[in-house]
Length: 544
Picture (cartoon, rainbow, N blue to C red):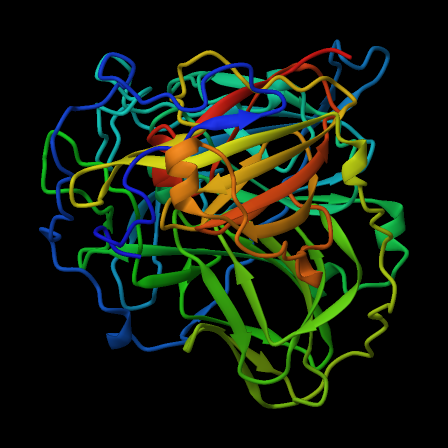
């Protein structure tokens, strides 16, 4: 994708379906859009500082950092759990500097507990946690804020944070609603019931209008839910299990992070953010020593926009899980594809590779080297043929099907100026109001030229299918005319998901049961530049 890519439709989409009462399309007016008005999208500005070319760096000279486990400091009570004492964590967001590569100057960043990725938080299913997220950051942001974006106007403080655990079934009051941000010197105490199956989740900042900047600065980390059923499988564990958080960055030769901007100083927002430096757990081209045995890697795409297409120089991945937990059976895969916010839980077997190296590749480029030792301890782990049943949700149980467009407002050249869901901006009245305990189908009609990773808070869902449709019929009549058969999800998407790839020119259908505590949540595109510029909407979970 480029800033001037070809469009399927220069315009915006609408919303229709059994649950929509009125407008099929609402064109955004100037008085409802909180954005600098202009007739065309500015072009991407050339960096004003020299940018590091990773090809000129020596590879595999830094060990792969493994984020430490967060440790509970005490136990506390909480009104949601009368008569119980819960593990309590205090996690500070702090500025820090660290080297991304041996031969580069230290890079100023922000991180949870002063590291990025932040400490890995572990929880057991059914054992609630209390986490106090404390903002101990400076009061001035070091990345470029666009004050025309809704929620980032000049009257708001530059530095604001609120933490969301991506994939957590958390109550609305602890979900990290984007407008619940707070400034340095303040904190929020959230509680997490952890009433969900074992899965690889992750946490990150979610502040309105600046999420893309705060995550780019380093505010993210892994959150792992465990349960007895998964532990009984005998999968690799302990030192043979590690989170691998992937992202991309642009790094100045002075060590500073560079965030791309437009050539309009009054409106620096750009629709995409791609870096040339691929970071693995916060390091560029690290290495990791392994024994000749099985390892479990929890892959997390924490990039703003980057799609990862991963492979190994020797052998294959055995994928055992996706966003929301284990798959029914392991899948042998030569490549693993991850859009932003997606996760893949994989087992890699290094046995028989004693004394050799294995490289993890992003497309054709090696980004991490595994160095297999000559000998190791006896491997007691197993890769079971059966993992966990994933009963399919019958589409017939849905009480409502929502037809939701993924669109954008473009300039005359087809360049995006803002992104929209259902043709609506963030501040318009809530239109998605599922009832607690009911099942719904959400159909994402993608009328843009981009693939969009769509994330729903609170719920896990299943992918039903993807189906091509006629975009011209949609444009003329706001109705879906299919042009081909429905395509079922591939095997690696047959587990529980919380983020789905919505391809251009396709209707992507998901089905979800809306369990959880009633309240206000959000759904959005997880391209962070899109999310920050109106491609996010609230939904209201109503009581049963």
